Length: 159
Length: 291
Image (cartoon, rainbow over all chains, first blue to last red; front, side, top):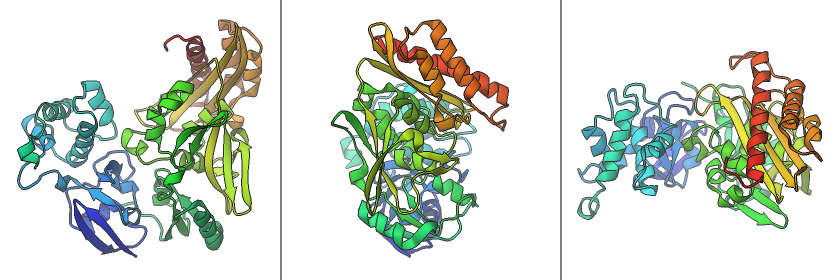
């Protein structure tokens, strides 16, 4: 069936089977491979995107459920070559090694900072508890999120 | 790659529309709420509905509000809203206790109370919460609406009274004064299903337990509760001995199965410990203490 949704501000249309998961629609139909397809069981969080501004696991969401809705993916974090502070933080604090969990981590972190600009360690840990990382031991990820909290985007950068 | 079997997709625009779609598509159709229980089961081909009726557009079923002498919770209320609700925190802290350990924050953004209850996993947490609180379920059908005791809601593992052209639309929890409530769960890892979990509320009048409710999950407790354990407390002073006797009754009456989460004797042991902890914390909260 035909679906139309707004992905990172752009209207996208596709013809899909109802059983197609949103993660595969994003990666295979639209070509946005930044969203990763991990455990397939809504545990690992590599596939986290925003649906109507709320983080969801796109491996447990049907593409047809997003029909008429707004989807934001990791590709939307950077604007005109300017990295989001969360991306900058992951780079500066070495918040990744293999990078597989990173898109989901960053989408969760961006949402956290949008709702709680100055989270403490415990809050960050709780917020990313639906995102698994097998490389970093989480310490650097928490530093990365803290870095982003300490360096919010300036007016000019986000304009 | 886990892919569900093919199905037809419909999107309901109202409760009446959802009921009409259920009627049109027959017994092999299922309502799709958050999808975080149903879609994983469909991926594993443990569920193969022929039609999914998406009810995520029914925003008017997403609410937590006072209605008369009850708190009314719309069936499409997300777990995240239950966790954050100031109204529930004021009356029933058992909800936040339980929600904090249901899956993870991202899953809680999507999963709903109605979906969780109707999926009726025998280890589901809100089933125990609703049993403990003696909540009611409001179920719509084309012919009208009925309200039933949540303790009669489940008819077996993954089976409830919400069949055919019926739809759970609301959960109602009676408002009680002078109470405390709490939920205790042990899981293998953060966000997992319970190995065992117990919830309770205690209502005090003077130094006597005027009412009490106990809920159990993941341990095969009939109707997700143990009425004998409640009887041991109701009308008595909540002494440590009474709480221990009540916990013991739960431990004996439940019927856990040995599985990858643990053997029967361990689960039974957990029930005793968790009921006692839940009762103790509920009691402290009932007397205005912090716990």
